[in-house]
Structure formats: structure tokens, C-alpha cells
Length: 219
Image (tube, rainbow, N blue to C red; front, side, top):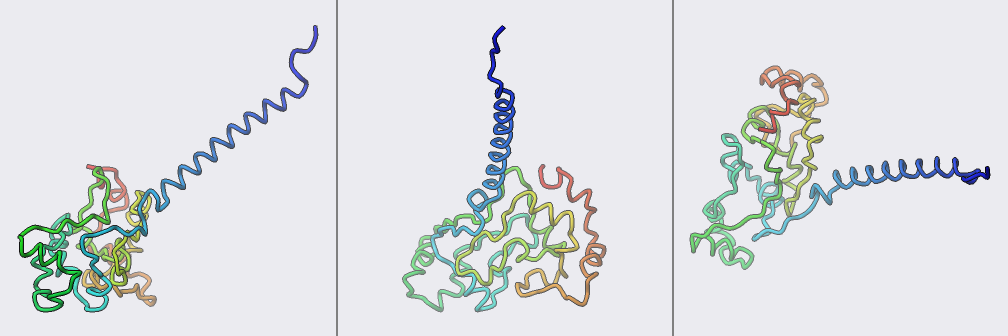
């Protein structure tokens, strides 16, 4: 009986299987890279706003505390967007005729709120509470980056699940004294390596098992 398959068929079949495996792994790698890339997470992406408000000027230059505008951050799950009246507390006295601030004046004059576009927008299935993090010594800059140096605010962190879990698995690396939460210039002291572990105990931060439980962030 004559040979049906070419004598090299076994080699070709093995190479084809290998090619399929390599292709599948490469495709998975590309999907994984896209998932964590700024294209998907919107990290470092500027968001157009009705007013190009500069945190670098107001926070870094003038030293305005985060809580002056975001008044509910210590008490609520949501760090509120300030009403136009907060802007006009200053701008009824300074830069009163600046063209760039006309939308602010119009908003106040017409009693119509400005529509700001969210920069840090977690998925609806993620539960995040600002007040809990502030109470436990997580600084604004830990999640929001160097806002005091941002002329236009952008998402500094990827805000992925793995990024959140890195903190929840190692809270001692990220917590700071509560009185320094709103200090954008605070740096971890090099001469006190046990500070984080001590704060975790003093603030009675939950165990790693509880912090990494699915129900902690997905409710």
C-alpha cells in the first residue's frame, strides 16, 4: 500500500500546533497589555473641562487645602465637586473680568451648575469610600498623584484592581499620619522604617484577609 502522508507530515503537524500555541499566547499577551495600558485605563489622559481649572496654581501656588473645595471628603464616600459659590468666594473679588472665568460668572449669575467631567471614574461594580481611606491615613496624593503640580488634572494611577490590591495587601507601605493626609509634600521619613506598621496597629486597620476579601470592594 502506498504512503498516504508525506514523510514530513509529522513535523508539519507539530509545527502547526506550536504555531497555534504561540499565537494564542501572543494574543493573550497583547490583550493583557492593552488591558493595563493607558489606552484602556485612561491613565495620564487629560479630560476636557468647562473651565481649565489649575490645581497647580490653586493648590501648589496658593496653598489652598483640598477640603476647601472638596468639603465632604472626610465624611462621605464621595469627594464632592464644589458649587460655583465656592469659586465666587474669591473670584467676586479677584479676576472679576477675566474672559476665561465667564462660564463661572454665568453659572453663578444664572444659578446653573457647571458640568464637570469626571477624571477618576471607577466602574459601577466597585465600591470606594473616600472617608474611610482618609480616616485610615491614606493621603490624597497616594491615589491622585501630585495634584499640586498639575495645571490640568489627569488620572495619575491606573486604578486597576491589581493596583488597589497592592495597597490592600501592604497597607503599611502607604498609610501616613492622619494629620498629613492632605499634605501634598509629605514624604515617608527614612529614619522611621516601622512607621507604617505602627500606624496600621494604631488606626486598627483591618487584616489583609478582610482588605482583600471580594465583598470589601464589590457589594
